[in-house]
Image 1 (spheres, rainbow, N blue to C red):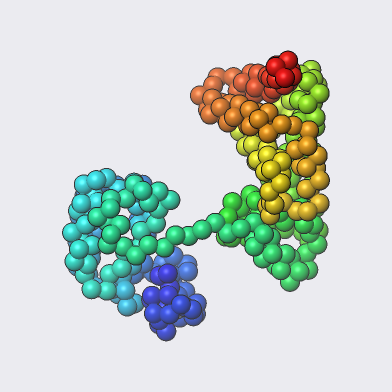
Image 2: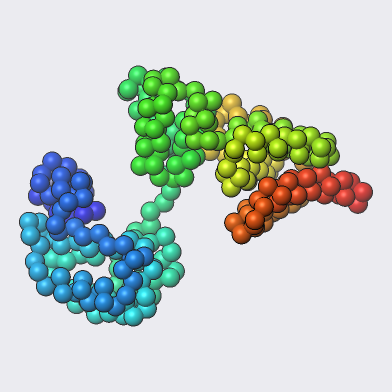
Length: 309
Ligand SMILES: [Zn+2]
């Protein structure tokens, strides 16, 4: 946005990327584009200082652009101080507010802004971009790896590209799903697949043994639960016959098989237990115990359900 406004050929929707202004903005050294972290500059004094700075004109570009990140973190007083500036903005000054929590920004501020909602980029689109890149660079990579990287990027193309970079520097030009999982410390879906089979078989002994194996490998427990929740989400959606574009078609049968084994209520029960555990782990002195208890309670629940029906 800053480049679009301050490019020497601008304002334009296609900044050239070559002029001094564009180059400076890209490398984060433009004196006319000022980034402020709303989370650490939350007070009235910070806003006052900003207002004093506004008196000076832009040095080399058309506009002086202030980007306030996490703008919702500003205090109420800081917002009110800012409001005066927004009511009569100095000429050639543009504010860009970024936030993930727009509902926390005062309506009086919002009403003075143009609002653009940035959406997460769908996994499929990220995969396509990564695939094009791999072809161009002559890198061999399977679909499963690309989907995994794209999912991990959580809707951000820049994150996806940097994860891809990371992967390439480890695997060189031959990327395989096993290596990718290793790099990111991810647990293969097969592990969860086995877990679900054991829950279905009401076999807490095997569950605990497998769990101990995972503990011994030094797996991050939060990551373990987060991955299992993501896994269950897909199983539940597949159980509802919902098309999912987040995973490659080769992986689908695995999820469908598990979806066919369980009632939706059981899956939702397991999911809610895991969510609870995920929260509890943060404050627990013994996270291993919590996971053990949660996982081994699932077969008990299944047994109880069978009695009921
Ligand atoms: Zn330019």
